[in-house]
Image (cartoon, rainbow, N blue to C red):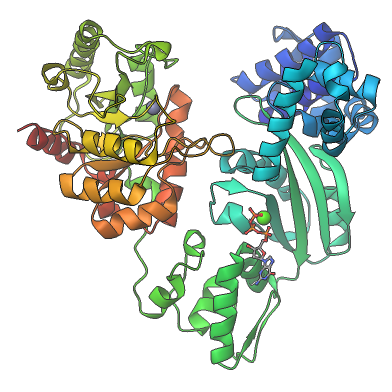
Length: 590
Ligand code: DGT
Ligand code: CA
Ligand code: ZN
C-alpha cells in the first residue's frame, strides 16, 4: 500500500468519524496524519518496516498501530467497522456545496435523512429549513445543489477518476494469476468527465480475482459480485482533499477473448456500432468475445482493426467523428504526444495568486524536461488574485531577467540536455475588460514577450456582447493567445454564452493562438472545438494554468484533449523549440 492509498484511508476515517459525531479533534488528527503521510519523502512501507513511524510528527501510538495494520495487511478493521456503521448515502451528501459532516449528521439524527432522495423530500416539504442552523436560505442552496448534481449525474473529473483507478490497479496487479489488465471505457479514451471505471482483466480463474476486488480498501459498497463481473462503489480523496465517489466494474475474460473485450469496453458505443457494421460488411460478426468468421489470428487489439483493413485507431479518437473512414483511407492524424511538449506559457507565481516562486516553478519545469517556461501572472484589475500593477510588472521582469542571465540555456541545447538551463519567457495573463479592451496600456503590453488574454469578469453578458468582447481582444496586435476560451468549470459552472465559431474564425484571421487549458477543472477549449479550430487553421497552445509546481504536470490532460481533437505536432505551438518560440515572439512584436 502506498502513501496516497494510506492517506486516502486516513482522510476517509476522519470524515466517517465526524459523521459519527466523534470529537472533531480526534477526526482532525486522522485527517492531519493523512496529509502528513501523503507528503512524506520516504516510503510509508519502509517506515513501518523500520519501526520509525511514530517519529513522524503528528503520529502517535494509536495512529502508528492503525497505519501499521493497514500497510502490512492491506486492511484495517477499525475502518471497516466505521464504514459498515455509516449509511453510504451520507457520503453522497458531502458532494453538495456547503454541506459538511456536521450538517449531515444533524439531518440524519433529527430527520432520519440518510440519502439524497430523502434530503430532496425534506427540503421540498420545508422540514430542513426548520432545523436549527439551517433556515430557508440553506434549504434553497441544498435544492440548487441537488438540481446541479442531477444535471451532471454522478460523473467525476478525469483526474479524479484516474487517481482512483490507479489505486485500484496497483492493488489488483498484486494478485496472482492475472495475465493482462487494462482500464477501458471513457478513462482509456481520456474523456474529460467519467461516469464509471471499467476494468478488464484476463486470467485463468476469475473467482479469486472477483473475491479480492470486492474487498479492496477503497470499496464503499458492493453493488454486484458475480462470476465474471463485479461492481463496486469506490471512495477516495483527490488532490484538493475533495471526496470522490465512483462506481467501478471489473470483468474477467480469457486471454483469447481479451482483445475483443478490450475493444468493446473501450467504446465509445458509437464507435463500436460503426466497427461492428464494418465487420458485417466483411461477412464477420464482431462482439465483445470474438470476430466470428474471420480466419486471421487476432492476438491483440490492433489485429482487429487490421482484419478490417483499418489503421489502428487510438482510443482517444473513438468517438465516431470520422475516425473509421479516416482509418480506412490511411488518413488518421499522427497524434501529438506528451514528449513533444517543450514548455508551457500560462503559469502563475506568488507575484499574483500562485503558491510558488519563479525559481520553484522553474525547477519543476526542468524536472519535466522543459526547455522554457512562460510565467503569466494576473493583471492589475484582478485584485482578488493580487494582479500586477505596471510598477510590479517592472519588478517581476527584473527578477526574470536576472534569472535568465544566471540560467540561460544554450539556444541550441537539445531536449534533455540536462543541467541548469531553462529560459523564462515574460508573459502576463491580461484581463479582457468588459468592453474587450485590455488591462494595460500598449507601452506596458510592449514589455512582455507574449500576452495571454482571458475573461475573468462580467460572465453574464449576452452572447453578442461576450463574442464581440473576446473578438476585440483577439484582434489586438499585442495579444498572443486567448486563455480558457469559454470559462467553463467542469461539473461546476457552464461556459459563458459565446459564439465560439465566430471566435475561432477571428483567431484564424488575426493569427492569435487559442489555449487548451490543461487544468483538469477546465479542459477548455474542449476537444470538439479543437478539431474545429484546426480545420480553420488556428494554432493551438497547451497550458496547465499552474498555480503550484506540481500543477505543471496538468499539461498531460491538455495533451489528452489535443489528441481527442485530432491534433498533430505542427498544430500545437509548444512543440516548437526554444529558439523557434523566441523567434516567433520577436516576429510578433514587430
Ligand atoms: P462513461 O462511463 O459514461 O464515462 O462512458 P463509457 O464510454 O465508459 O461508457 P460505459 O461505462 O457505459 O460503457 C463502457 C463501454 O462499453 C462503452 O464505451 C462501449 C461499451 N458499451 C456499453 N454499452 C454498449 C452498447 O449498448 N452497445 C455497444 N456497442 N457498446 C456498449
Ligand atoms: Ca465507464
Ligand atoms: Zn485565468
